[in-house]
Image (cartoon, rainbow, N blue to C red; front, side, top):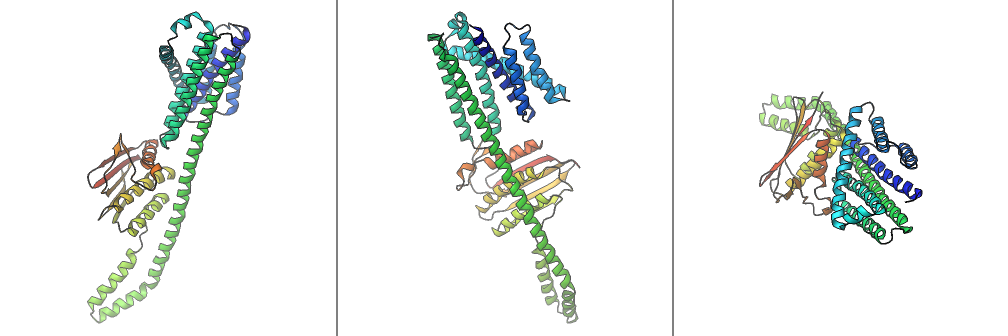
Length: 422
């Protein structure tokens, strides 16, 4: 193997290990690595690939990776070391498993021991497959809250191209080991797979951002509607206060006439006027806005809706509460509206350092559940099956809370416990 080919293979192997390092770090830290740092590390890896038989090459490579992780986790160096150990364990374990399974499928144990070139391609292919499997795993974790068919399409494409990479490269290497087109084909297929991964990553990012924009737009709308509702309620209260003197004069007149029936009738009229003011006020503007909107929707549909609020503060962010309450109350309204005598009970109360949210509603439809996931009954939006409740579970998990769901033949219950420290 000439020196140019050796540099090519060394750099390709270092490149794949570096890509795995980037992916592993970003997934564990939940943050993106800035492009300039990626470029610097890639340049270092290229320079590191040029010398032949570099002393302590494995130790140098490990040191680079560890220093990189310690830099990004500073000042929490313990976290950096922990991520490094997890990365090394995954890298060695996955490579060993992939190599074994791949060799069993291709039945190429003998040629690996007799051809150094074939062995080199085999090792790099194994490293790359290990990287691809980790990418598929991280994308699955990101993709759970969105529609699954895109994830299936992506997996099919990636597996197909990886199969082409493995088969074509190793086949040509067996038949024509001196072929000059083999490195070009191998590199082209790897670049194609990396491009597919990058495009899909971008798609997931845009999907998440789009979901975030929709939630933020919903928060803005709720705040605006709540402000309008509050202003209308204040106007009604000012009007009643302005007229109270006249109301008292009329009641006094009935009292002088000892017309107690008229007094009762008039007091009931005033009471109905007060009861028409449905504004629910809580320490959270967003929670108030959501509860008022859903309460009004229930009233319009003729669904009795009892809402109880007993908490003094709200630790959860507006985005999460909009996701949790918006989805659950929409589901409860939909279910209650489909059965005769439908009803809803909503409670938010502080218990010690936790906020307890309970939502009970009537239902009349058969419930489809699989592994804790409930299928939607919205016939007008079949592509949204189960997404709402998945988002609720994710929001509760992100807040370090707990959710409990159970149901009977006619009652559906959701109980959520969220940390709510003062």
